[in-house]
Image (cartoon, rainbow, N blue to C red; front, side, top):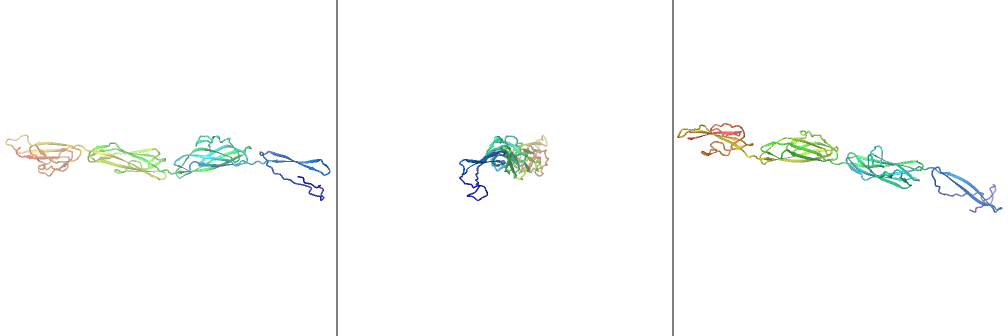
Length: 390
């Protein structure tokens, strides 16, 4: 300011015949706008006191800058147990452009599936607060975030990748998109089963009877299990007998088997046995459970049926030999042992009859001649004994 310019005549003078000035100012406007300005220079000549103006008009057009956004996604948990669980995802969109943008859409994709809208509760979306996203204006450098809930499922060992995407436009309706992914692992859960064993009765009379045993297996796991064996401590491996080898049980499913063996024993015995069931899941994890059951053996009072016959109904005085036959029949349900034979007239004739400690079983009488060997165990026994002069 105040510079003196020499005439522009091509001749050397006392100074330069031109001057240059640069001014930097910020220009604001939308794409397509024109910025116009006029520069005015005021000079004064030596011969005149009146000044004059020289001016120049210039124009510049604004070049459009495309919108830009950046998306970040976070999961509320890094893993879920098989077969799956709900996960909350928080999606954040940041305007990295130079002018405001308006959000036009928010979508998500699970494990490469087709994208779905997360701004409302529908389909895979179980909950969301992203309903106000569409139409929201985000200024440069500012962010918008919202959270939605979906089910993440898979088999043990799987990794499920979830991708969220934002779409936004500027005031020239140019579109910007960006996405971000987040992965959730599916963890293994060990299988479990519950086994119950029941008997049709809690007790039987000696020497025993048929008892119906029912084995039940319930899958308490979160996935299918396959039965591999059913082994009883008394009956052995009954897997095939029960037709349970390879049986598949869905979660909560139950299967059972019934067998009817004869349970026997002496009075006071207790039949007790335990069944063990083994099963596996699809990762070959093994689970077992067992249950026991008992059946009491009740005693019964033994019974005998004794008959006594004489060879004659009368004799002449003063008397004669009479043959008496004693028959003993076992009417019990188990073996009995003779301990004594006592006659009201003849006294203890146990040894004379050779019946002491003889065992016999229920059944028809077995004839025995006088003087023969002691009665062997049988259904019943009979002996003859001759009484002199009776």
